[in-house]
Length: 172
Picture 1 (cartoon, rainbow, N blue to C red):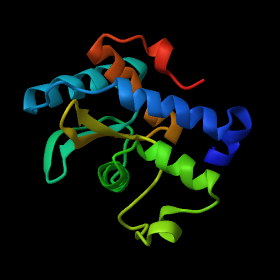
Picture 2: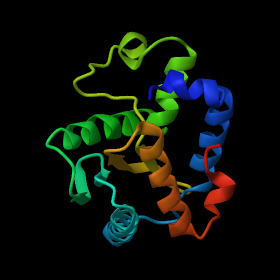
Picture 3: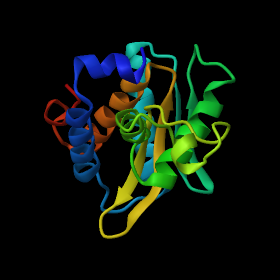
Protein backbone atom coordinates (compact mmCIF):
# COMPACT_ATOMS: atom_id res chain seq x y z
CA UNK A 1 0.00 0.00 0.00
CA UNK A 2 1.40 3.38 -0.98
CA UNK A 3 1.41 6.61 1.00
CA UNK A 4 -1.45 7.77 -1.25
CA UNK A 5 -3.54 4.78 -0.18
CA UNK A 6 -3.10 5.73 3.48
CA UNK A 7 -3.98 9.34 2.74
CA UNK A 8 -7.53 8.29 2.01
CA UNK A 9 -7.65 6.64 5.44
CA UNK A 10 -5.96 9.46 7.41
CA UNK A 11 -5.21 12.94 6.09
CA UNK A 12 -1.50 13.68 5.71
CA UNK A 13 -1.61 16.78 7.97
CA UNK A 14 -3.01 14.66 10.83
CA UNK A 15 -0.27 12.05 10.44
CA UNK A 16 2.43 14.74 10.17
CA UNK A 17 1.20 16.41 13.35
CA UNK A 18 1.20 13.07 15.18
CA UNK A 19 4.69 12.19 13.92
CA UNK A 20 5.97 15.62 15.03
CA UNK A 21 4.57 14.83 18.50
CA UNK A 22 6.25 11.41 18.44
CA UNK A 23 9.57 13.01 17.52
CA UNK A 24 9.19 15.60 20.27
CA UNK A 25 8.18 13.12 22.99
CA UNK A 26 10.50 10.22 22.13
CA UNK A 27 13.88 11.74 22.96
CA UNK A 28 16.71 10.30 24.97
CA UNK A 29 18.41 12.11 27.84
CA UNK A 30 21.61 10.26 26.90
CA UNK A 31 22.44 7.68 24.25
CA UNK A 32 25.37 5.28 24.03
CA UNK A 33 26.15 1.74 22.91
CA UNK A 34 24.29 0.26 25.89
CA UNK A 35 21.15 2.28 25.09
CA UNK A 36 21.40 1.13 21.46
CA UNK A 37 21.64 -2.49 22.56
CA UNK A 38 18.59 -2.18 24.86
CA UNK A 39 16.48 -0.53 22.17
CA UNK A 40 17.62 -3.02 19.53
CA UNK A 41 16.92 -5.96 21.83
CA UNK A 42 13.44 -4.57 22.57
CA UNK A 43 12.69 -4.16 18.86
CA UNK A 44 13.96 -7.64 18.10
CA UNK A 45 11.84 -9.13 20.91
CA UNK A 46 8.71 -7.39 19.58
CA UNK A 47 9.43 -8.66 16.07
CA UNK A 48 10.15 -12.24 17.18
CA UNK A 49 7.04 -12.30 19.37
CA UNK A 50 4.93 -11.30 16.33
CA UNK A 51 6.77 -13.48 13.82
CA UNK A 52 7.86 -10.49 11.75
CA UNK A 53 10.58 -10.81 9.13
CA UNK A 54 12.41 -7.52 9.61
CA UNK A 55 15.88 -6.09 9.68
CA UNK A 56 16.67 -3.77 12.61
CA UNK A 57 19.49 -1.25 12.51
CA UNK A 58 20.58 1.36 15.04
CA UNK A 59 23.41 3.66 14.07
CA UNK A 60 25.26 6.87 14.50
CA UNK A 61 25.99 8.56 11.15
CA UNK A 62 29.26 6.67 10.68
CA UNK A 63 29.00 3.84 13.21
CA UNK A 64 26.67 0.84 13.37
CA UNK A 65 25.59 0.12 16.95
CA UNK A 66 23.00 -2.69 16.61
CA UNK A 67 21.94 -4.92 13.73
CA UNK A 68 19.60 -7.90 13.51
CA UNK A 69 18.14 -9.68 10.49
CA UNK A 70 15.27 -12.02 11.31
CA UNK A 71 13.96 -15.01 9.41
CA UNK A 72 12.18 -13.99 6.23
CA UNK A 73 14.36 -11.05 5.32
CA UNK A 74 16.27 -10.73 2.07
CA UNK A 75 19.61 -9.23 1.02
CA UNK A 76 17.63 -6.20 -0.23
CA UNK A 77 16.53 -5.18 3.28
CA UNK A 78 19.94 -3.80 4.37
CA UNK A 79 19.84 -1.49 1.33
CA UNK A 80 16.42 -0.19 2.39
CA UNK A 81 17.81 0.31 5.91
CA UNK A 82 20.75 2.33 4.57
CA UNK A 83 18.60 4.48 2.29
CA UNK A 84 15.88 5.16 4.91
CA UNK A 85 18.40 5.95 7.66
CA UNK A 86 20.15 8.38 5.27
CA UNK A 87 16.85 10.31 5.11
CA UNK A 88 16.39 10.42 8.90
CA UNK A 89 20.01 11.49 9.41
CA UNK A 90 19.91 14.14 6.68
CA UNK A 91 16.55 15.73 7.55
CA UNK A 92 16.45 15.01 11.31
CA UNK A 93 12.90 13.72 10.79
CA UNK A 94 11.45 10.27 10.50
CA UNK A 95 11.69 8.91 6.98
CA UNK A 96 7.91 8.40 7.00
CA UNK A 97 7.30 12.10 7.82
CA UNK A 98 9.64 13.15 5.00
CA UNK A 99 7.79 10.83 2.59
CA UNK A 100 4.42 12.20 3.69
CA UNK A 101 5.67 15.79 3.30
CA UNK A 102 6.86 15.02 -0.22
CA UNK A 103 3.50 13.39 -1.01
CA UNK A 104 1.70 16.45 0.32
CA UNK A 105 3.86 18.69 -1.90
CA UNK A 106 3.41 16.30 -4.83
CA UNK A 107 7.16 16.00 -5.09
CA UNK A 108 9.98 13.69 -4.06
CA UNK A 109 13.28 14.17 -2.29
CA UNK A 110 14.91 13.43 -5.64
CA UNK A 111 13.02 16.27 -7.36
CA UNK A 112 13.09 18.72 -4.46
CA UNK A 113 16.62 18.18 -3.12
CA UNK A 114 18.41 16.40 -5.96
CA UNK A 115 19.15 13.38 -3.79
CA UNK A 116 19.74 10.09 -5.64
CA UNK A 117 17.21 7.30 -5.07
CA UNK A 118 20.14 4.92 -4.84
CA UNK A 119 21.07 6.56 -1.50
CA UNK A 120 17.82 8.04 -0.11
CA UNK A 121 14.40 6.43 0.41
CA UNK A 122 11.65 8.49 2.01
CA UNK A 123 9.71 5.41 3.08
CA UNK A 124 8.63 4.75 6.64
CA UNK A 125 10.82 2.92 9.10
CA UNK A 126 13.67 5.19 10.14
CA UNK A 127 13.30 7.41 13.20
CA UNK A 128 15.89 9.95 14.35
CA UNK A 129 17.59 9.29 17.68
CA UNK A 130 17.44 12.65 19.37
CA UNK A 131 19.17 13.47 22.64
CA UNK A 132 17.61 16.34 24.60
CA UNK A 133 19.71 19.52 24.50
CA UNK A 134 22.02 17.90 21.94
CA UNK A 135 20.04 17.04 18.80
CA UNK A 136 19.97 14.12 16.39
CA UNK A 137 22.89 11.76 16.94
CA UNK A 138 21.68 8.68 15.06
CA UNK A 139 18.77 6.70 13.66
CA UNK A 140 16.84 3.56 14.47
CA UNK A 141 15.49 1.83 11.38
CA UNK A 142 13.27 -1.15 10.60
CA UNK A 143 12.65 -2.65 7.18
CA UNK A 144 10.51 -5.58 6.09
CA UNK A 145 6.92 -4.49 6.71
CA UNK A 146 4.71 -1.98 4.91
CA UNK A 147 6.26 1.42 5.59
CA UNK A 148 3.62 2.62 8.06
CA UNK A 149 4.03 -0.61 10.05
CA UNK A 150 7.85 -0.25 10.00
CA UNK A 151 7.43 3.27 11.44
CA UNK A 152 4.95 2.20 14.08
CA UNK A 153 7.08 -0.75 15.24
CA UNK A 154 9.92 1.68 15.96
CA UNK A 155 7.54 4.08 17.75
CA UNK A 156 6.10 1.26 19.85
CA UNK A 157 9.57 0.14 20.95
CA UNK A 158 10.58 3.73 21.77
CA UNK A 159 7.40 4.22 23.81
CA UNK A 160 8.18 1.07 25.78
CA UNK A 161 11.77 2.21 26.25
CA UNK A 162 10.62 5.53 27.71
CA UNK A 163 7.64 4.17 29.66
CA UNK A 164 5.22 6.20 27.55
CA UNK A 165 1.81 5.07 26.36
CA UNK A 166 1.95 3.85 22.77
CA UNK A 167 -1.82 4.35 22.53
CA UNK A 168 -1.31 8.07 23.19
CA UNK A 169 1.32 8.45 20.45
CA UNK A 170 0.42 5.91 17.77
CA UNK A 171 -0.78 6.93 14.35
CA UNK A 172 -4.55 6.62 13.94
